Image 1 (tube, rainbow, N blue to C red):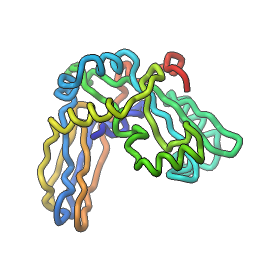
Image 2: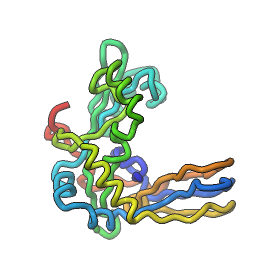
Image 3: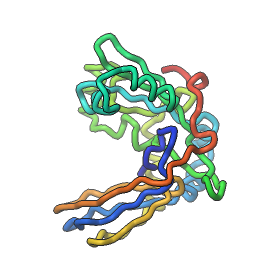
Image 4: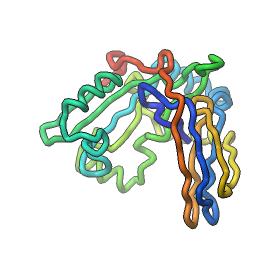
Length: 229
């Protein structure tokens, strides 16, 4: 489960899904209410992230996306400009790789109702979601900071496997969804609602449109308080 682009400075407020081809089986786009998830998570867990936010670390190299692919440019200057505007800290390595860090709020007010929502990708972009063999290989080759993505608490503390399991277990409690049929349309409030895609068999074609971009108050946090890199 995740909220689309919850790590960005400007996030889509609305997602529109349209089923062009329904799969033979599986493949539901499931959703979960982030306000229910927030209320059901252990208070100790949510208090930590509500206070410090969450930290996303990314490494762009020859496994996964390179930085020219991710940013659409082979020139470092536009990348640095984007990072400055989006409150992302870039680190250029001597071998040409790019590492980035960014700190975001984990609990945000809904832009229309003001109700607090659990809005982040702490569990979804955690390095523990990678296959263990792949994670070990990447760590061995590129070092502890070489995973394509990883998350931490906003104070720099680790997000443990137990925390990831707790978050996903609560998401599972509130996950709902219907099988796709050709012509179906699903409108999702991206702030209020997390979403996921189930495994499927057969052809599956779902068109997605991101709309209503919004900058959430207090969502972008300074890295100066974000703990060690």
